[in-house]
Length: 69
Image (cartoon, rainbow, N blue to C red; front, side, top):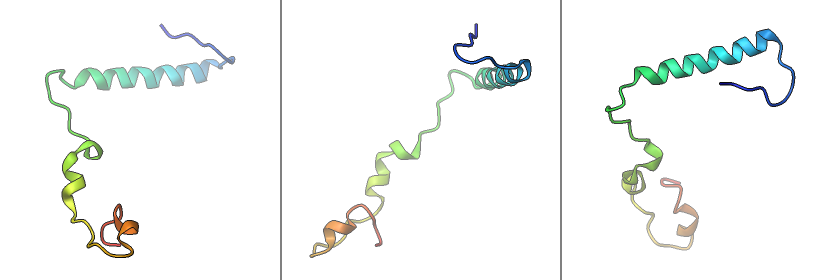
C-alpha cells in the first residue's frame, strides 16, 4: 500500500511514482535470493593494502591517504 503523506500529486505524477516502484520490485524479484551479492569495493579490506605506505619523512603525514602524491 502506498500513501501520499504530503502534497497533492497529479494522476500523472502518481502513475510515474508507481511505475518506478513496480519496476524496482520487478527487478528485485529477478535476482535469485540464494545468489551471493557482489562485494562492494569500498568495503573490501584489500583496497587499504593495495598501495605501499609512503616512506617516512617530513611530509609523509600529508601523503598517508593519497598514494602516489
